[in-house]
Length: 575
Image (tube, rainbow, N blue to C red; front, side, top):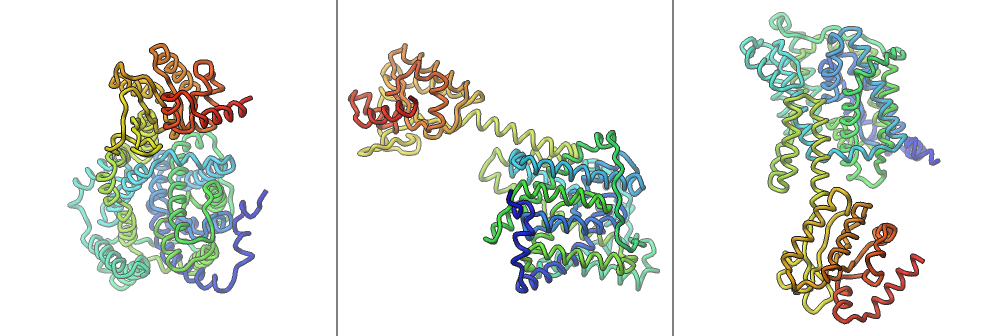
């Protein structure tokens, strides 16, 4: 077992040097400056006291720095997971209550255990069933939902919180007249400042600046803004160790939301990690190791009062841009958060919640990918509708059902595409031995007595009927003149028993009609499956050719030395 592969910190720490530390130190401080106000804000989204957002920035970051295969991904509380936590836990307990907090911490343990087991059993491939359009549609819908749910803090009105957008919008329209002018002004000004600073320079800690602006404004003019809701007391000190109370009935109720968090968290981490990986050549992302790292982060975090956490798009980008080279930047960030928890929490007493809402709204609305939707509409119509369907399902039915709809739609599209692959007739390129698609190459020669066709997919139970029907259509077009069918199988990389039986039936069918059926370019594993399935009982070994041109020449001349050598080679391989 390669221990460095399973504990990536052993790969980079022994070779660590001072040149790395400068970048890591600056990046760690920069990320912490963004993380502290975000952590407080995201805890409020999750329905938890603000301090729990900072707890998520401690042990999970340390565990990921040790076990994560990416050296620049920033782990901690994120808006999307926080809303999912609120959606699931709020049905079981009152937000902010002791039981609510206990359930959120237990959820982190459950999520971590699932992620860890998936990594150990190398199940990272499951994420491939969520296509990029589905991820984009889901992320955009959740971002919009999170943003609208923060209008209650931005405007100072107790709007309903829900992951179903029509419920939120209806309540906003009905109660918008109750907005608090002072709260709204501070919140909107904070939004404008953040947007302006981001356009000026993304490296400017805009979140920290508006937090400072809000605290100073409330401290100096608090008497005039008495109706503005503030954070108030945030307990000082580090989280104590404690094992979450295990309740299997409760775990069963949490399982749907836990699986949603597992999928979303893993998708976020992989997509962020891959984008950062592309910018350097020092390390490579290991999907299964990422699952293990996330699992250990959440499980260990739950022992120190952290709710489910994952990687952050914004903080990971800031970490890389600020010069982070290794996981040491995360450890520096943890040190800053510890200092804050021990000595600086009283500073946030006067922080207006509307400022936190502004930070969240600007951050999440940047995740709404209108540009990607427009690109897909122009480039791939089916992917666009897949994105739109996931987007609408998530908005209307909620986050949990949105991710299920996305997975279901991805599978439906996958089945549809594999069951109806591209099939075309080939023609001979003049003065050459090559056959090409007659629909793309106008000058190719197509003979009436010969049908050379290509099937561009694996041949299995889901598309064998489609294969048979399309072949029948092409043979009918040829009519009575047809004497030879050549299957160019270069694009077929797999065939199952249903496909073999269908091919055997077609060979017998066309042989009875006096039409020869030859195979060209069959890959070794596919040929193995054909021969094991009894293809040589209905066909001859001499009817397998390296290329379509060889098959046509053999039919016309009846003698081909190259074909004899090839048939002899195949025969020897199967003796």
